[in-house]
Image (cartoon, rainbow, N blue to C red; front, side, top):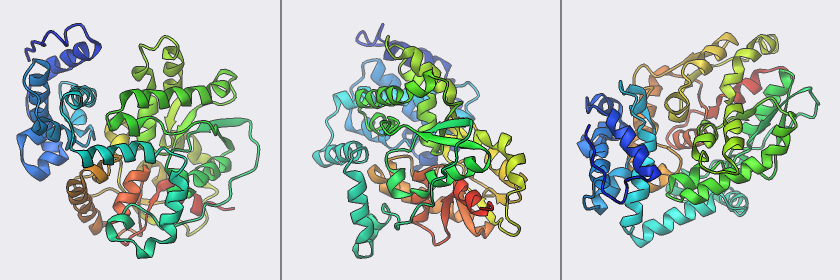
Length: 409
């Protein structure tokens, strides 16, 4: 593809990156077949190829319109198109650049700006926990649209107290400790059963994804730097062997710290090391199976349906690990017979900013999972778990919680 950048973008980091990505695209259209929004809407401009056309026009100096912004907003950034693309187009990086440029030129409606501000500030605020607890207390009285975002209050099991020579650092997350606190406890308990101690750094917070995905690039970078500062003493002293993420969205973001902060003279090298140490929880499973197999209680395993989050299978390129290793522990794990590659519609804050599309994708995903008649649906990201649970009576949990329940005390 020939691209002629307008003068304002020539020589800029965004311009150089975008031009390099655009040159890879041959416009074959394979990506449209796996794009969730194109599947729903059938509009070329709501698929990767059409959005690439729009971003190319913007970079070449064409007028930027509210319509351009809306087409880019509808993208889930699921990166399914990257998995499908035969040319290796890094669409996720391109759409981030496109959104930044368009948002700088197109004024959003007041209500939309307020919603996005509340999301990026509220979800990462210390006030989120008491607000969520209040919502859970009055949940039966709330309208369905709010119930969909507020899980029933569930207590976390006890955090293990044993010391182990092997230690891993874990990011607690910004919303997970309040919304679904047992995910973190279950992670620590499963690792404890395998002889690994889980360590937290209280100063760490949001991984940076929320602000970054809502257009606050500098705020997202500030979150990343804060986490690096919180983790650095443990990393520098070799006190931990890896940084474990039990939310695949956070894992994808932290694995990208090295790229995001590559031009920061203070943090570039630190960020690169942090990224190299980061592992999704499922990446630890191969080394844990032999230890844990003998600890699974007889009759405790259940029939599971697994929804692999986009951030796991398309972002981190981790496919097949969870279901393979849970099966090795005795679980019956199935994927949907078709469309297991498609996004469930959660996509971070997408279910709030694009509810109609998000719920249509949720229902489509649940329709594909229903024939499996599973006792529990499992996933690996809190957003997917809560979003899917809002549309079904079948329990939806993190796979590590199910594994924790199956282990002998």
